Length: 228
Image 1 (cartoon, rainbow, N blue to C red):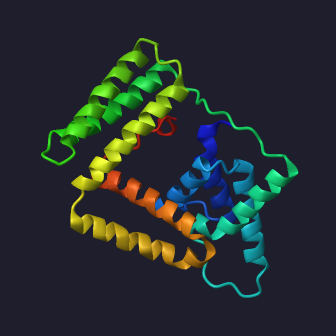
Image 2 (image 1 turned 45 degrees about the horizontal axis):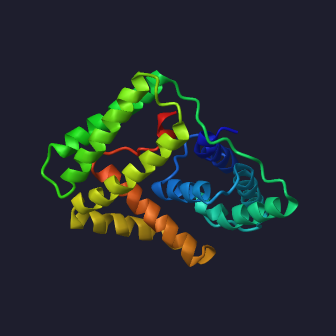
């Protein structure tokens, strides 16, 4: 299993389990899946957990509403991960996506276009955005020359860049926007707070705000996952 298929496999599996062809995951769902990915939860555990959660849901005599979030499956996913670990059957996952020089160059060009548009506007994060533009321009040139071979190292560098860009983005987002984002987060989390630990909720909150801050400014994620 290619590491960068983690998100799409979970999205497709959840949609099938929910029996709805057009259902779209929410920003909260993506934040939760990202926390599982970064926390080393195997894809197999997530898929098993989703199946278990829906099996229990459909076995209920009385069902209230429908399952509208991957968060509903959290406890079963973590339980499946513990089962796999105990059985010693945690599958290995590749960490290198299959990207050629043209795909990489296109990815960097799109991110550069977004950052240049933002850097042209007065904001507290201009200096950070300018630094990110310089770094991405260098990586784009390397990609075109076929010299960006170590994609794992490139991903690490992009993660560090994104951390700085996100911090700058959050200072550039208005107080009203931040308040609206926080209210949206609280509304989405409300049905699931009792099913998650404080650590899980804190991680989801952080990732949700990170994603939404970038969206407010029209910026895309810098991870190579979004290049495939």
